[in-house]
Image (tube, rainbow, N blue to C red; front, side):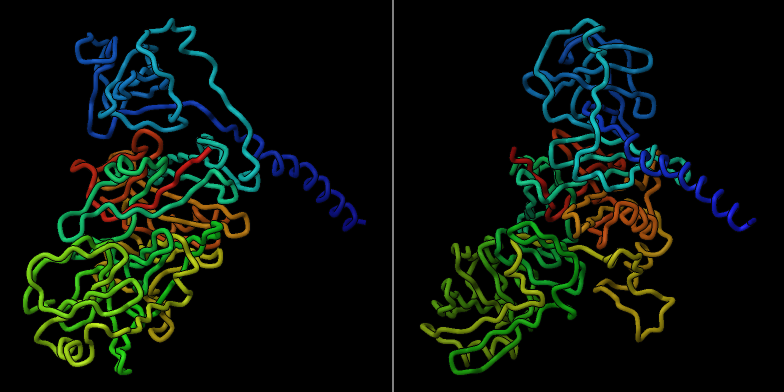
Length: 498
């Protein structure tokens, strides 16, 4: 009898709890407003009009000003805002502000409206269907950017953290995902903001680490063309029909590529469009732009046609622009590799070039690398886990100094990518940190746990630290340390094609 009573009581408890569990998500209301904050370590004036010629109401600091944005001037460099406390209307300069929320459709005006019109009730909608299965918390602020993307902002005090996440529905035909290399090879890296301006991306995060010639270090595929060879590092890739993948394309330090001469002689082919040791044979494409003159080091150049016919074999003599759709093999002139080139390659030869990977990079439209993987098949993964026996450790191609400063209990700014393969969802996350006083960064494990909250089955980091940043709509939503935006090589971008 007691057992029956206990079971019945337990059933009542479960029934009472079920409404709370099933309605937790329904309490999440998705905002459709635009908000602003003063950039960290900045201050600005709340002016009476869109320009420095207007007087101002008061000065605003980064740590004491919450604003709602409801308009912009025609040039888009001044925003019309409502200061929440104390209630004031005015204008702020774009360069001093971070915007967040739905800010891509701000009306153009130079009028100062009556407060009653400016302070209209905030708009909110239910979660879109693609996010109905996700478990948001009450502390999460969520905005619908469009029919295929959500923006989430989570702030916590213990630990002190500011996290930004974009959730994209890859099933939505309006969502387009692309990789963009903005660096000028052998010259300079670039800024995420510059890359956004170049191609008009809607969302962008910093991408891979960069190598000695400013090109990305790991596998890069753009529009179905391989741009940089893979390393044993985490890579995010997307097929033409937008099926996502996070994993590895090689287990070696680079791919097992090779060149086969017409006479059957074979030699390894180490890198593509990356800084090349003169003892290696490397290949370059139009994505490198041009090759500098380094006589005696990579002093032998073999120009190949699009179908790998040898067009010339010659010593380097000045800067060389790689023609569109052509390739150039480079080797040190006074090395065994250079000797192989001179002995086995002649003008007119048709050679074979093996650039195969596993999985095959040709199956993907875009790919971008970083590392390491932090969520694998829905579980936390510690790269190069010191708690495992050495023979069981799996270590991505990072050195020990990097691991000690980035892995384990280090709280640093981080940028990361995750996927929910079942729902075909893509997650982009950026966590602020370093000198920024409202966020102390995040550890790898806590970042992995956040991904797992949202049912990610795979997740990987990108370049982090001071390189971390997230752009949405007209501006960054994240703050940078005191030195400002850092130069990077490439970016992962989302476009909204309504």
